[in-house]
Amino acid sequence: MNELFNEITVLSVVSLGAIGGVAAIVLFLVAQKFKVIEDPRIDEVEELLPGANCGGCGLAGCRALAEAIVKAESLDGFSCPPGGSEVMQDIGKAMGWEAGESTPMIAVLRCNGSREFAPPKVKYEGAMTCAFAHNLFAGEGGCPFGCLGCGDCVEACDFDAMYMDKNTNLPVILDDKCVACQACVKECPRNIIEMRKKGKKNRRIFVSCINEEKGGVARKSCKVACIGCGKCLKECKFDAITLENNLAYIDYEKCTLCRKCPPVCPTNAIHELNFPVRKKKVEKEATTE
Image 1 (cartoon, rainbow, N blue to C red):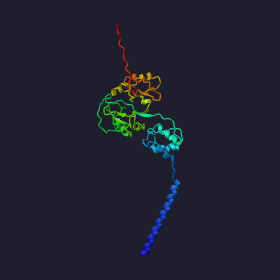
Image 2: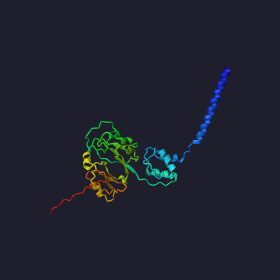
Image 3: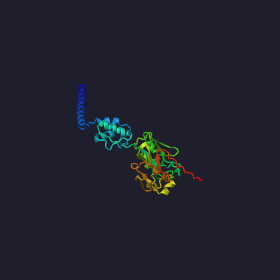
Image 4: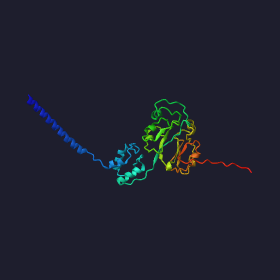
């Protein structure tokens, strides 16, 4: 009886060993058949990237960008917002490719509907997210295009480049920290955050409003809304301003930062950032002899 048991045990061990051996051979052959040999340059490129994994390049992180660059055999069409032109130049040198200069970009808030200019008319007591509030009502100030003030954009920023101003209830973008990853742009349900050229000396001019309602209606909700009067359009000599759907827009590619348009805007909807303070015109008093 013991001998029979031992024979069965030995046979079982041998059978399992044989099955394991066959399975190992099959797995080895399958692995060899379908193995993917990864280009070592992918690791080299990834090491040069900042590792932010912000998705600003349009891909799912730095690894994905590195893979796409190596497969493309060129830097054309690729960019790394956090790393900027310097990182792309480094990658170009490492790969032996030419890298063109990229234009530094920055996020811009195109809404100035603070509590001062757009006083609350109702009190919102729902879920404190812009995505939720956007589907419920126009906003506490009444503008259906304006900032809802819940801070979804701030939460989306991984670089501490934004914060909510408690007095205005609007987000503030920090020039020295914004890496143009576009996370805030994608998060805003009202599309009031726009990527614009950073500009020489961080100087920018833009219409801080996206309200497409007629002037009178827009002004009822916000004192600094664009009313589509067209005065800025007439003032611009460089065709940088267009007027569509009761709203003016300044093309940063054409704008020369001449500063002619802000003074003619009757509602101060055009913002000029990081410029020297304008000198006030001193009226000469008439003197009588």
